[in-house]
Length: 224
Image 1 (cartoon, rainbow, N blue to C red):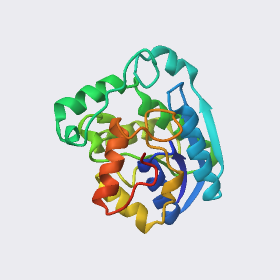
Image 2 (image 1 turned 135 degrees about the vertical axis):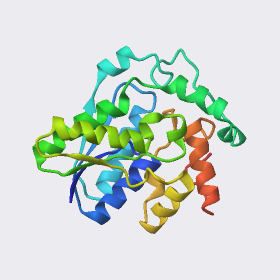
Image 3 (image 1 turned 45 degrees about the vertical axis):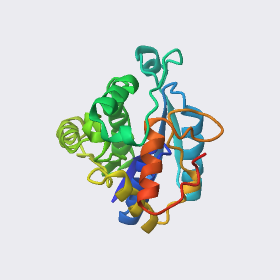
Image 4 (image 1 turned 120 degrees about the horizontal axis):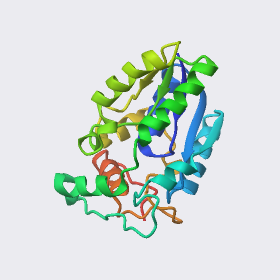
């Protein structure tokens, strides 16, 4: 099985990529730059991970997506919500965070770009990192979304490219456990909405990573 991997450099996409390597061959890793605050850190993390696994890596520039979105991930005049670990269990608060950082059709766009590469390069699948936790507030992380977009790709690709996420049925702690079994280099990942010297530890992405690391009995080397 040959794959194109959508690699942001974060927890889910990295572990999903590592599993794809266990299942078959990865032809190319793609990282998207749409002007998000963490773009430089995501690109650096994805590049380092690709080098670690000896994989080809390409950055796709999507400036128009940053221009049309009002997301706090892009618009630096807006505040990215900061949560406590307890807040992660409050659907009202996590829904508000999801609304603040939502980027219009981001995953749909990324997948279709990756599917074009997959069909051109003779790959059967696009690998992406979704998870069961965030599917509650991000519908484009859900199994229903995977089923729907695969239905679309049956028509938009002659070769029948499919999207696979090896982490979509797992929560974050289970993803960390899978990553441990796959010997993922945790020190190379970046799971923060910001582009600081270290991960902030306060945004939802950081909180979920830290909670998962603790639940799995690991020390998050990136936390400060």
